[in-house]
Image (cartoon, rainbow, N blue to C red; front, side, top):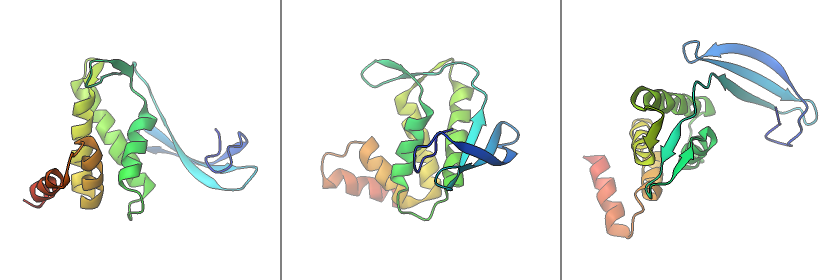
Length: 149
């Protein structure tokens, strides 16, 4: 596993335990070069999931894209990385329940918005502003008013 701090491939597992109701393994790792510690998760991948984009293109689901979009929305907010990981796992669980191997990107966007709305209103508005592609300030104000209602 590559260290996210220094990109060294030399890491060791410090601790392992089950996570997400025994559906994942959480591992604490330490970089042998720089000494930083970080967390990784292991999951069973049952079949490839295909995302249907708004323009009709199809592409394979990439977990890192979902993680990164949520992380960006929560940047500099007091939200733990473990909480963000739980959101990603919950969204993936919801996707698996409704998909037959394919799911619309808009459905994933709505799931992210639902989870962020419950988590933090600033993260929700940040994500919504990109996801909804607001064209002007009035659209942004409307979204904030909907959130407040």
